[in-house]
Each structure stands twice: as structure tokens, then as C-alpha cells.
Image 1 (tube, rainbow, N blue to C red):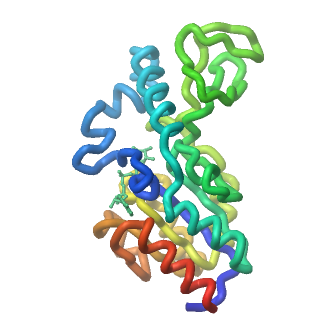
Image 2 (image 1 turned 45 degrees about the vertical axis):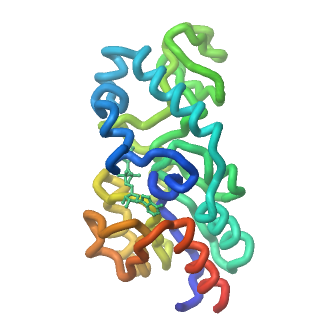
Length: 234
Ligand code: APR
């Protein structure tokens, strides 16, 4: 294990699984119980905004009821004790990274406690319900608020920062993502191209596991703290 200077941590739903939040593509995953096109596409939102608001309002309540797990806390320990810049780029819309005290967190698929006004672009931070009656506090228009979740086909958020960090990082760690949704699934290839070492934490081999130098299979809540201890022992 060598000393790293800038670490890029990509997380997916798997890092929040041990906190009790469902992943998307597992046996009882979110996408097994809901149609992606109904709740995660612009067409679905235009077709039935009330259904989409209900889905994310319910998810918002679930997120409020859970706590970060040992994997989230291991990232905080790494950021506080290891002499490197550690950035967290998450596909997750939950706020467990922040709740665990993680710094430098970038939500590329949006955040569950935010809604964006389609009339003026204002981003409303709220843990309360948002629906078709919600009035934008900035432009006062009613019924134009959309969950600030990146739907399939929309552009990811924070991509300027992500692209810079992919070029500059010397260690790329992927935690709890199946590696099937692009552009995030392609980040490891970019990091590798620019010379980063690459490590993957999942339960089983993923779609792009051939791009990782090292695979650590098992629950992130158990495996990541051990990996962090090894880094800190250098
Ligand atoms: N520890 C480590 N890995 C885990 C754990 C765990 N306790 N539990 C599940 N995993 C792994 C699974 O092995 C799987 O590879 O997490 C991954 C979860 O994959 P998905 O359910 O596909 O979630 P994710 O990769 O985050 O999905 C990416 O797809 O639907 C969109 O926008 C949505 O952000 C999401 C994106």
C-alpha cells in the first residue's frame, strides 16, 4: 500500500444498504417495485407529477429515519486522519455521507431534500413534502417544483469538478455500485487512464470489474473500515 495524495471515492446505493435503504437492482430493489420510466424520467414526471412527488416524498421520509453506517463513518475517519484530499462523488440522493460528517461530497444524481423550480431554477432545500401545489419561494409560481433528482436522460450535476478530479486522483475507490449506469460507470476508466490505482467494494463482481486493480467483496460496513486502517497504517 503506497501513500496517496488525492482520493476519488465513488459511491452507489450499496453503501447505504446497511443503513436500511433499498438498492435499485437487488432482489427487492427500488426498480423491482417501481417502473423506472414512471418515477425517474422527465416523460414520467410530465405524465404524472403527483406520482413522482409521492415516490420521492416517501423516499425522503425513509432517508430521515435511517443513520449512516460504518462505511460512511470510515470515510470520515479517512478524511480526518489521512494526509490526502479525499473527495466523495455519490450517485446516492440520500444525505448519509453528510450525516456521517463526510466533507467534499458531490451529489451527481441530485439530493432527496432538494426540489428545483422549472420556472426560475431556484433550488429549495426541504425535508417536507413537495407536490404540484408547492409554490416556489423565489418566483412565487405554483406547481413548477420538481424533485432535484437527475432523471435518466438529464445531465449529471457537478461534472466540471468530477472531470477535474478524475484527471488528478491517484486512487479511485468505488463502493456499492453495480457499474451499469453511465456516465458514472465510466469514471473508473477515466481515472485509470490518468494513472490512478482502482479498488472496488461490492458484494459480487460488477459489470466493469475488469477495470479494477483490486476487488474487495463483502459488506462495505465491514470491509471499508479495514481498508481505511491499512491506509492509515502507512
Ligand atoms: N456493501 C457493499 N456493496 C453492496 C452492499 C453492501 N452492504 N449491498 C449492495 N451492494 C452492491 C451490490 O453488489 C451492487 O453492486 O451495491 C450495488 C448496488 O447496485 P444498484 O442497486 O444498481 O445501485 P447503483 O449502482 O447505485 O445504481 C446507480 O442507477 O437507478 C439509477 O440513479 C440511480 O444512482 C442510481 C444508479
